[in-house]
Length: 378
Ligand SMILES: [Zn+2]
Image (cartoon, rainbow, N blue to C red; front, top):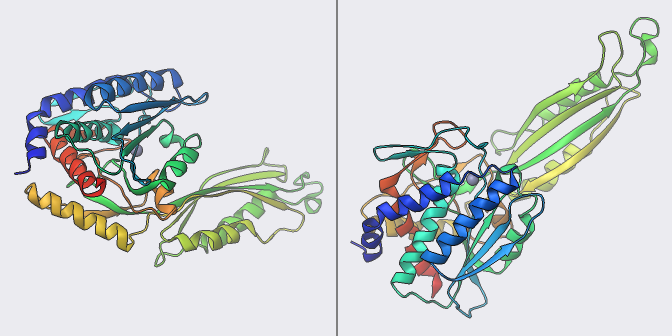
């Protein structure tokens, strides 16, 4: 058995403690003060477990972000690991509890478990005295759950300097498969303006924004294509003021998903260039496709093969799968940098009250990450 795995298994209790400390410091995306406290804990853990360099990126609207660096390799290309410390949970919303091998709590699976295994993977490399040609950058952001508006730039900037990107986001349940494919995603808003009029007295003078909205919804739905993996969902609509008034305004919010990067431009164009169905109404569209898909390219398959081989030496089979959800890994994949996602520990229930991880799996995932880094660091 691998010495790295052995070392990490011996440290399972300490890995659990790291995860506990990160989980207890709750960090809802919208509460900067709390996220910053979690950042303090994360920094302290990094300093004691890894001890490389720490750079804090101050943020006003969201929690401060961190760029941790392990090693001093002078190769220009680095290895990048990206994670986020914010969670979808308000403080106290769900309890933290341990039940045998299971740890329940806010963010344990998405993705404080992933942060804990990364810290310990780097700790294992340090203990083994590994110094490679490349340095390892561990970038931890604070707004992934609310769209990554304040971190997209730094993620792209670090990705451009990287030969490979590992994302220890939650794995695919129940067997902790990694994600070799993720859909791309975008959001658009349709603002429709009509002409209001009294529905009885001068019904023919108005132009109903709601009627136009109805036509738009049907028309937008035609852009979806199941075979090609393009989905279009009008998830929110709003409009009108009174039953006897022809509606002046209506709004629709639209979520789109794509599976190939080359679908993005055409779809965005089709959404923006709306025909108008009801004479007298106007349609204004805002929004964009924010995240390109993480495509299962040759280089992604190669990374998966390497991981699968490592898993075999650890005595288990590692599966792969795709996810309809997007993560920050979509940004790096969108640049064409080989990215593998879902490297976090085994667990389930992201964004649900059932959120949990398997503690005995933590050393395995930390070892998997440590050894894939080893393959790329030299
Ligand atoms: Zn996440």
